[in-house]
Length: 328
Image 1 (cartoon, rainbow, N blue to C red):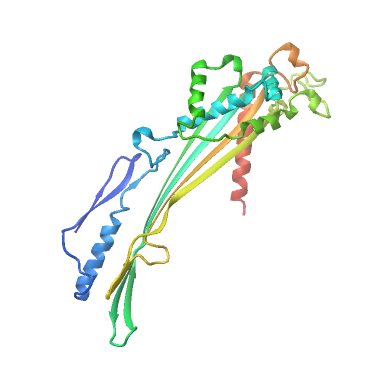
Image 2 (image 1 turned 60 degrees about the horizontal axis):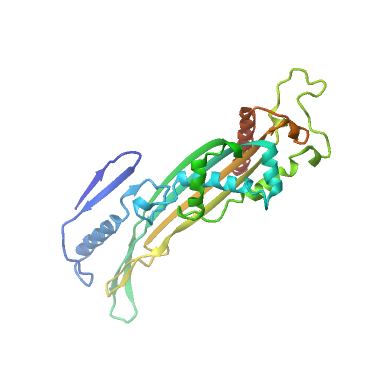
């Protein structure tokens, strides 16, 4: 029996145990204790070869052929933009949202995290039975083994976009119809319309009870514009998919042997956990026109300043989600 350890590319393959053994015939019904021990070791090694190869998990669906694997991270990024455009470009059914993005220049900051974890567990249990002369009595010797593996990978994609419908990329817009058909394995929506509806409830000066601070207020002097004066609204969307098989594997019950399944954890367990987290913030750069300036809340600022405010808001939201988990 030869066990060979082969090291591959760090980014693609962690390790692979290649098991080789000479062919032989195994009879569980009899034999000496030594032969049974050899048989047990051979069986454990053979079963172990099924899960010995460890690969970094892919961000694609593993059940499809490589050429048709979907959705990818690129698909998710494209779908996010298409859904945002669909939410803000409906003048008939969502005229308030449409008007808000017509009069106001919004900058969106998107932080997408894709997290994939694979787990494999092999827990064989071998029972060697020596029956006594008296019926229903025996001496059973048990041996168990455990082989587990976990692979984890995280990717983070961030981008900032100017939600100006007049500057839309027409070529990319045509691709949105493809994403809507579910060709890339994407269905449903991320609820952007509800998020935007809530955010634009405080879009104009008439939406507030108290006046909005302006850059030109008396006493402001030459103080630098604070990001807190820029209207921002944010949301976190996360969804988790877990699938796999558990307590799988055969159990043979013979006169002198029972196994390799039958343990409390089963023989084979395989699970894959996919968690996608999306943090998105919308910041107002102010009124697009002089006519809308009298209505829009907040100052008119550069797109860069609005992008910075949106990123700061997204960072605060991420910290709010993370910090409570680290506190005792």
